Amino acid sequence: MKSEMVFSGFGGQGALTIGKFIAQSAMTEGKNVSWLPSYGPEMRGGTANVATVISDSPIASPLVSFPDILVALNQPSLDKFAPDVKKGGIVIVNSDMCPEINKIDGLTYYVVPMNQISSEIGDVKVLNMIPIGIIIGKTQTIKFETIEAYLTKAMKEKNPALLEKNLKAIQEGIKIATEA
Image (tube, rainbow, N blue to C red):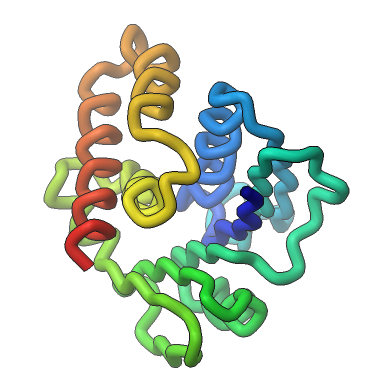
């Protein structure tokens, strides 16, 4: 098993965090991982993306030229990375920030109003947890229980209310993937 992923969006949307949480969870499960971030000099509002690779065998390079999975949290990310997704790959799109979705044949799309769903959950900061749930629900690359334990350990003392919203957003993503 080897899965190459790119997570991309504006700075502050949590694209790098998606990759970090998936990599941490996969590492906890004993898989080989790489996490290679790339971002502009802006703290918020600039572009940010991360290449994350998960594999059962050693990873030769952290670079991802042709991802199996793309999470595009904004239009520039979708435009830049979607043409390179491997045939048979998955594109997860934040439809609230991507008004022009030109679907490419041979790819599976999850077009999800992530801003809206995260607002309904109660905090737009959990927007980046929705694609994690979709990845879990569609690929089982990592287990929900693993990321739940990781987030609980990291957040239970500091912010239990945000922890619950994060877990709810992941579960919403799993539901989207399994019902599609």
